[in-house]
Amino acid sequence: MIATSQPEARPLEPKRQYAALIDEFGKGWEKGKSDRMAGVFTDDAVFRPDPFANPLRGRDAIAEYWKDIPREQAEIAFKAGEIFVAGPWFSVEFRCRFRRRRSGEWMDVRGALYCETEEGRISEMRMYWDRKTASPET
Image (cartoon, rainbow, N blue to C red):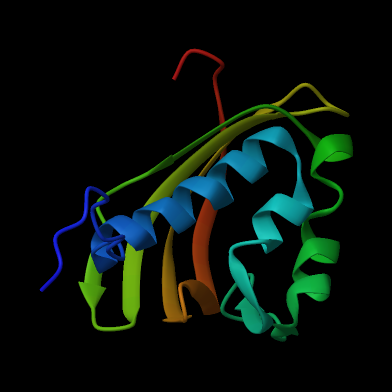
């Protein structure tokens, strides 16, 4: 074995890797950047925005789904809970609060994400959520 001064690059453990994906997804939501949100997905990923919706297929379709955030939502705050890992799959609860631009009404969205990964990106995401009006203080 040859000693080097450079440490070998090691892949992140799955829990940290998946947390980084969700953090990037959440930052994209907060900034209204649909391309940033879609960037955590594989090129041919499947996204189900709710249990009753038809699946969206491909990164471009996912970016298109989220493109209206800047027109619809303001003062967005996204938080994710603990990541639960089972091999290439993970789940996490989330909360997203925002103000509707048209009405000024505050919304509180709470839900869960169920994801499958492939080569460091999300290949499938199923989103389950509930949305309620909220006060600006909560």
